[in-house]
Length: 256
Image (cartoon, rainbow, N blue to C red; front, side, top):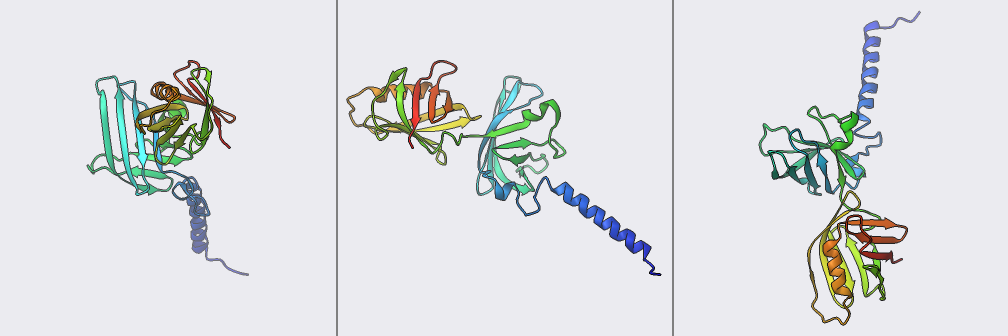
């Protein structure tokens, strides 16, 4: 009859149990094939949203994560006694699927965000995800809209009136990597900075243009639209620039 070493068997059983539990706990931060947020997601970019605030209406937050593992975190307090804007910069480190924003003052707890597809979640003081009704309030969405960016859109309607012209003379392109809008509505080239937040919110920053004398006025009308527009709508091969919920200011068709 074979005799078993009872202490050894118990030890091996405990080791196997621990290994299974540890593998299960780590499943949320790294898959069995080694994939995680750092090496499988397009995480570089800017994320924005409004985080909860104890003594104000919210904290308008923008987090930029760079390829060289540096970050910029801008927080704007909405109303309340702490009204104002703060910007922090520094480096971050990866911990599984999470990024930890390092602080220059070591005794201040660093912010930790879980990186997911096109969004990040701010974790609580214990490094855990916030659950319950407030869970979605701690999410920052990645800026941009892949349905719109890096595509050529031909201008076909401006302020409710049809526009004649070709895809070479009347168009816009949102260049995502540069955060730059390329536009043309006649003979001059126009270039504006832009940001798309929450997929649909739009903001342009002052741009530059070439100074050729154009015979038509479409160019000036498009410039006025770019100054007014604050959101976009996108459908099947159609893009519109809008102001609030009013009628579209400009309509474009996808150039294929």
